[in-house]
Image (cartoon, rainbow, N blue to C red):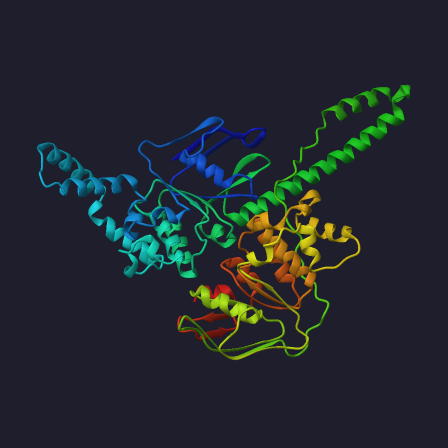
Length: 526
């Protein structure tokens, strides 16, 4: 059990939370949500003791262990993969290391013997003899093969290091599990396994994620950070969304009725306060008026950008045809005689465990990378626009956001562009920020702004939800659902794939494809 009692956190004059009281219990999974900068990751640091509260305290049950998904895999460069996982249970790992050190003594003292006896008893009680096997099972379920177990972290691919850190957090049945964006960089199989793991996890889980499907699948509760407060809802993300929207709607309707009543009373008082025969009624209505209080509707920290892809150029019969496409990277054929034709109304999700194959295909379609053999033929009426996964090349200069966007939309008056950028959450002085200092989320919104101004009729999107918050992802999702043209995308966002796409092309390990016209849910559950 984890309890938060009257906790407030302030940085100077800025207050992140005020008088937070929450209780987290065993067997429940809590999704922690809020706008970027609301304090989600900061709250997790409070729970671990990495940060101190300004007021209040945080308590756990006696001897309960908190496990955290670490973010910096470089700190373990010289550590064996299996050891990194076991280090998730710090106490067990220290016992193992102390045992090793004592057994290495050439001369064994009586004191060493007593200490070893104590360590062996603790080791047995903590099921230490199965530690490596348990660590290997988690790694295997996350898709890390046994050939990597005895390697150092620096010797394995970055994508696998992320999985090792996740395995470390999950290891040893922690009492309280804190996960900050655990699905980042995971493939579909690993996400699916993690979902089942958390659904069946008997202890307390608190998770931060931008993946709405994931939150819906694993969460029993939602903790919402907004208005400088934290409120807990029973149910998953969709239930929270519907509940919060309903509560706001009811509050606005209640205020509207109160305002109408106030106007009615004010009119009566104004008409009859000087009338002797009506003076008592006017006085009575003044008392009624004083008792009416409007509900305070505090502006939410959540802001939704306006994302809409308009089409000015209609699509002809020919859209895109890919024929016998071959591409090798470092002597390995990652695209092997790929052929497919995009038809009217197609919204295609490209799926694969090979991230390089996906990104290479998207770069080829966008004309940013050459292929070895085959053909890529766009129709004459097609105006494509590309959102690359790595957008760093677009932001190397020191232009302001306003000047940067002018490269893609020439106007005589900046007012139109400033209004457009305002709808993409770059308001007032924000438009003068230099693009080379923007956050990942701000760069992503700049790229989406660029694409909208290009008014394409064909979209190519490589992980479009990367760096976006839940509000921006929701807006992007709606924008792509309403897009009247055709598109090809790859995304780890389950809900985006399911609600937008009507066709799935899977790139297999040998570089060939399986092309099926079905929903993402049908593919995912197949």
